[in-house]
Length: 305
Ligand code: RRO
Image 1 (cartoon, helix red, strand yellow):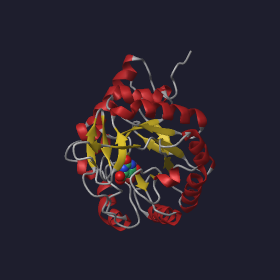
Image 2 (cartoon, protein in one colour; image 1 turned 135 degrees about the horizontal axis):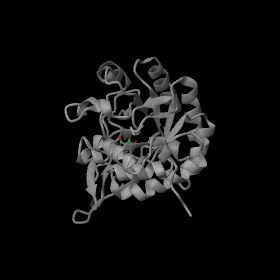
Image 3 (tube, protein in one colour; image 1 turned 60 degrees about the horizontal axis):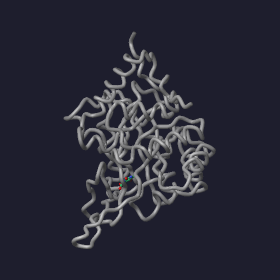
Image 4 (cartoon, helix red, strand yellow; image 1 turned 135 degrees about the vertical axis):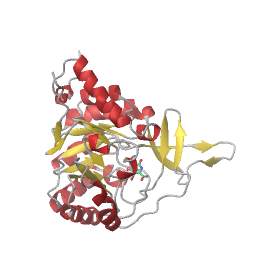
């Protein structure tokens, strides 16, 4: 029996359910010398903004117990350079490219969505309303149901591409935000972005990160992420892409059992650059061992009682 790893999310066909989490894989081509990126189910870019952003002051990365803090601050070369120099390098890899977009205002999201609609080789938009490391926009949109819905609606209206809205875990009840973006026309939801956190050097009595606070990811956040993915999957009908501390195939399968139709791998890419390929192979091994013919049979197959 051959295992069928293909999944389809919001009309985007993927050869398997594994993609990178935005921001942990650059614009993809950086990893090409280290692994065969065409084996991925999809490729998600670092967030792109209308104008170039140089990001937060260093240090911007800090290892913590079981995880890492980042405060990159949306560093990216801006839409024009992305379209001219980054996106064309991804043509020919035979995999759907999802472009993560972020803005300070609703108008910026709309302009990005409209421009990317015209760009060849874009399979979908991931709308970042959950960056914890910028003062304007970012998480402010994702923490309030009406602004989350407004951004989703505006992007939906500006583009015919699938709209995947990336949610923040830094909210009281994530299902309220999930339902709001579903109601506003999101094609799918991805979660979780990083958990707001900080680190302090007690000898110096100073914060460690240049921006004082950051976003926590890695194995430390996995139980929180699994819980939030599980809750969102029960709250909405649209597909969910689950992420947060996935380090191996077992972790990825756990997110699918909780209801995720696909998964994204983030911090693990920094530990082992080709870990996603190992995860894809590990999912296939699991399917053979458990006689699962189609990977989507795992979605929501958690047995409770
Ligand atoms: O660039 C960042 O600091 C960043 C972003 Br845009 C995000 O969405 N999540 C994160 O942890 N860091």
